[in-house]
Every structure is written in C-alpha cells, then in structure tokens.
Image 1 (tube, rainbow, N blue to C red):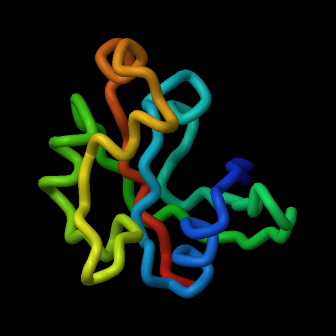
Image 2: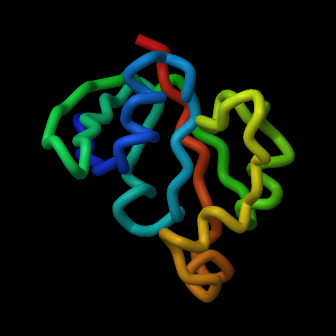
Length: 111
C-alpha cells in the first residue's frame, strides 16, 4: 500500500538525501494503517516534487520526547550542529493530540 505525506522543504531534502530515515507523525487513524513493507510518497510542500521510500519499521511512542530519546538526531533529520528538540514538533501537532493519540516513528529505507 502507498501512503501520501507532505514534508516541509528541509525535511524533504533530508529524506531525499537518505540522511533522515525516521519520519515522525501523530499516531492517528491515518497512520495506524501504515505497515512495514508499505511505501510512502513524500511531497515537498513548496515545489510539489515527490519521492518514495519503503517503510522498514514502525515504533509507537507516548510522546515526541520518548521518540527523540530513542533515535540519533541525524536519523530524525537534524544536522550535526543542530539541537534536536522534541518541542519542535509543536509546530505541527497540538499537545492535546499528542497526548490523545501518541506518536509514531516511521523508519524508512534511505533510498
């Protein structure tokens, strides 16, 4: 099955280069349908460029802090000099939704 997701340009570039191998999403009804072996089609929110990656693993967490503690920051799309902060995800998901649904780490093939 193929799932479609939009990514901001910096995250799209990191997935495209193979450095970002974990996509972080709310574990909502839509993401509950994702299975290992599925494909994700990512679309750049600015250019509409698309890439696909295979889902190689899935891990649920109660919150983004737990997810961030589990993976190296490079796998989450952060550069070596950047601070990896779970609060960054507040720009995408309200705290109430995170508490209600939990979050999902979607592990991707690098190419």
